Length: 201
Image (tube, rainbow, N blue to C red; front, side):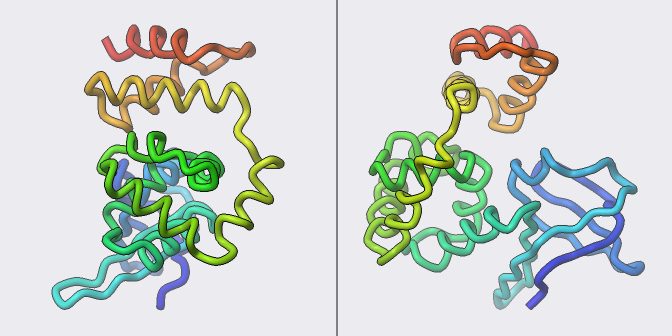
């Protein structure tokens, strides 16, 4: 098992990276949330990894933080019908605390809005994770302390709104990030959508 990669960031795309480790280029698929935290190519980087071995390929998945990898592993190991591709979409689509809160509250609607996750898959994720002894209880205990702020909820709602208008998830994230750069006050989701639309136009 390859637990992590540490080396020079040779190439960075929204869905994958290549890391030069001692002269060997390792390719790893990553969530958007990890891509947003990467340094510039050529810089030193360390990614936690999860290796999946198939008959026709060995595929590495990379994560900027342990909670991202933990959630990815939880989804592929404990939710029937959820493979690496869907799990990566979930990690990309929602902040981890927001995802945990949605599971604890049984909010299928929030999870089903993630790109690549339909209503049936969202229902299965909520049902099977809530049924796992200790998972939902532990999340519920920590959800109050780690609940997303009003500003974070507004950003999330704005991203979902842009996705529903046909924009790609990565483009929506980038536009919102650009729109809020240098902003000191909180904005409503509607205001963020309007600002992002001007950027995307």
